[in-house]
Image 1 (cartoon, helix red, strand yellow):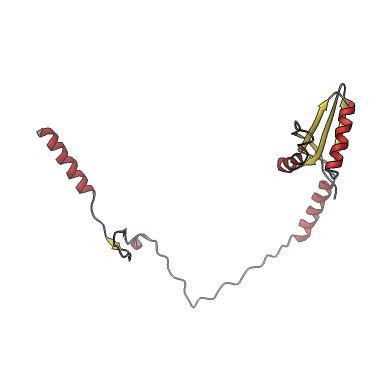
Image 2 (tube, helix red, strand yellow; image 1 turned 60 degrees about the vertical axis):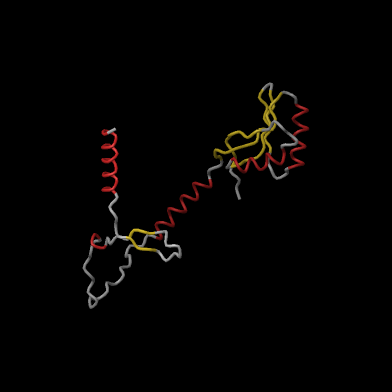
Length: 168
């Protein structure tokens, strides 16, 4: 009993000494239950010497070596290289992969009627026909078209493929 009492006394002493009150300021709340701690830390802030008000202001320095002509030449060369790029990695919709020619032709006609602005790619690698639709840079674009034709082709899916870059 004496040991437990001394232990509790030590704990109470440690807790009371650790909770030293600091400078507090009351907020203007009507119930006066909330307080916030106010510490003056301005003594720790660095101080810098003030500029002389009579000193002349330095003039803005303008660049002397303009590279606008050089940049224009480089941009033209980059644009001409980019015009020669015809392919990129992107996405297409795999609409059909099977061996029945008449099925793939009927499906192709139905897809062209539903989304005429999309280009279709029909390939034959013996014995399979593959029908892919569109050239999409992002998967989100391909998903939007897939949602339009999902009732025609319930098992169509998006595949990553080399796509043609449209020349506009």
